Amino acid sequence: MSLLGEVALIIDCEHKTAPRSDNDAFGYSVGTGAIRDGRIALDKAKPVSRTTFEEWTRRAIPTTGDLILSREAPMGEVGAVPTDSPVCLGQRTVLIRPDASRIATSFLLYALQAPTTQQWIRANSAGSTVQHVNVGDVRKIPLGSLPPVAEQHRIVEILEDHLSRLDAAAISVQTAVRRVEALKLRTLSELYAGPMATLASTSLDAGYGTSEKCAADAPGPAVIRIPNLADGKIDLADEKRVVDPSVDVSKYMVSPGDLLIVRTNGSVDLIGRSAIVQNDVNAAFASYLIRYRLRPDVVRPAWVHAMLRSPQLRSRITSLAASSAGQHNLSLAKLDPLPIPLPSLDMQDAGLERLVEMDALTHRLNRSIVAAQRRAVTLRQSLLAAAFSGRLTWREPWADVTETLVPA
Image (cartoon, rainbow, N blue to C red):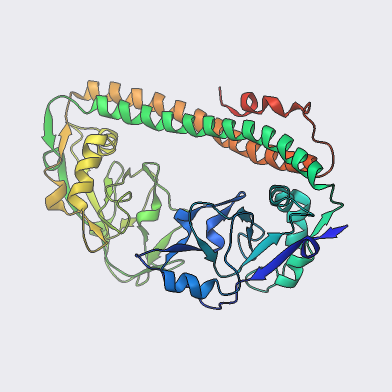
């Protein structure tokens, strides 16, 4: 039985505070959030100056052939040091420098990701609030009986052959996701056509919501907030209510068919998101939302909601909400003039029926994609388990993983 500390040098990050990020980057500080699935994602690492880099690498400079392991959530994640950019250890990580005469870097990388190893790390973690593994325990991580280095390379070669097929399947899954999204956007773009009317002209009334203080389990009426707008509907599972029940918020109470639009947020993706109030919703709406009460004789609320998601209007909304201060904003003055396609109600219904069919297709595909992603995680763990228990060969039935994972 070999322990990690017997076949590799373990070097801890000696700093107790995080390094300062620097736009004039010389290298990157690899923290726990930058290590995933055997890789180090430099876009998740913190750029640091040469001065900071040199200070943080006084004990050792990570080089090709070294590994970096996270000691805290996501605990036990390990990645190979990249070859194209200088990196230093971030907080709560350790550098692992294998003894090449006893263990191959690639073999150790996969051995540390094996299910039995990950289970050992979790079982030997400590901490009452934040779980972590101590440096001393990292050195005690059991690796089992190590085969000769030549045999290690052979095992890695077989493992990577199978994993490459799994990665190809994962790429196919990601491609399916992109195709679904592209299909939805193309459909919305096609429907954005015909005679136009302003959003204001399709509305009976429009206004801002209440700014009254709210809290969970407060005695006043429920208040719809940004998190309650989900998939075009109102979801009050995470409900907050007006703190002072004596305050009159009746003019902010919503009615079925009202269209609520997010007007203020730090995320441009949330700006302009909309939802239609269902029949069973009894609530007011918050000040960072705008309500439009639409004219039932000229437009379906679902139609306006769909058009607000079209590429044409999303681009315009993003431009209108742009802000250099970091907080994006819309107002009635910006939203009222938005051009909304206004075909006949029959044509709106036909377009909405098309979108319902598209949403049903998207839902089915997304379920297949989620199932495929779960199977990918399970297969990867099974492959790693087989590799370090002597059961992985060229003839194992993993060659069909691509066909197994790709949704029909």
